[in-house]
Image (cartoon, rainbow over all chains, first blue to last red; front, side, top):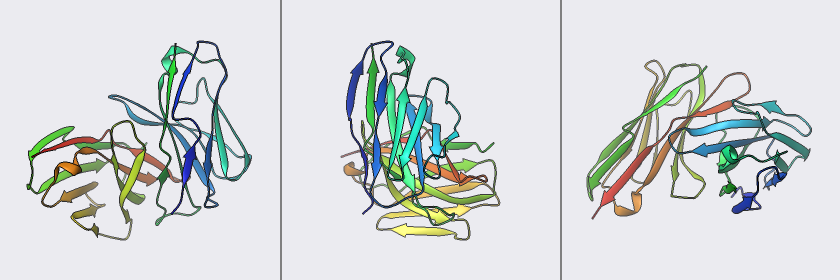
Length: 114
Length: 112
């Protein structure tokens, strides 16, 4: 089975801190995604990447950046955390191509910014 | 831009009932539609994926159908059990970069 691992399940940070959320997948998937999930708003796409060193903005990229130096790892970076970034962050991956690609999620990272 | 709507937002049923969850989307040019389950505080678990060329998929007590022309999918759960209690989300993959767009989910409670 494909495994998508998010390194931190729960984080508590202070306003202004730099935050790194790490995501690693073990099945050589080309596409990787970062979503945030908030009550009443559902899942919203922050950034996605379809190859090493490639990145595309999603619907809500403001306040975030990403890094993909290796195919298996996609990192989400909050340069200066703010309280409105308190949320559940979900990473997902899928192979290249269309149609039969199952989107596989990690367990999520619950971030609280004080 | 693709928009995905799920109705109802919440559902509470007694154990043993057969139930239907609905998902509608605005752009019928899709690659696939996927149904997920999410338990509180956890990630999403894939249940079924229907490719654009398919009409339905089945797994155990779950059956998902797809009608692209009307922009609808349904998830049918037979003989519901308390363990089915969770939030169910649908995601539609469309657009040139294969971007999954999610509905806000249906929160299901199955009571004994």
